Length: 151
Image (cartoon, rainbow, N blue to C red; front, side, top):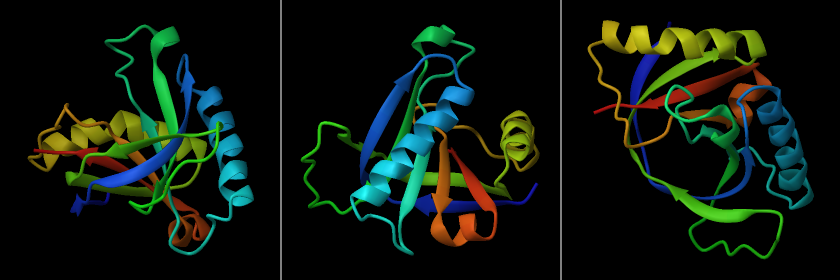
C-alpha cells in the first residue's frame, strides 16, 4: 500500500450523522450529503468531503456506531440549515493511504491499514478518528484517501 505522512490542519466542518451499523447506510448518507453540498453551492475544485466513522465497532455496539458525512468549510461559515450540524476536526499527523475509489478497495484498505501502520513503524493515535477524504481532484481520477491519525 502507498502511504505518506501528512500534517492535516484542524478544520471547521458541517456534517450529517447516521447512527447504526457501518455499511451501506454510510454510502446512502454520503449520497444524501453530496446532494446537500451541491444544492448549497459548495462544489468546486477545492471542496473536501470527509467520511468519519466516530466509533470503533469492536468496542461499540453496531446500533450505536456513528458515521458522519462532512464538508470542510471556512472558519467564518455559519450554519443556517436544520439539515446539517457544525463541528470541527482536530489536526495533527496522519498516515494517508491513497486507494481506488471503489467499495471493494475501501473495504480491503480498512482491513490492511493497521498492518501497514505497524510495517511503517507508525502508531495509531486513538484520540482522533480515522478520516475518509474525498477531494475533487482525486475523485475525478477514481481515487480517495484514508487518513489514519498517528502519534
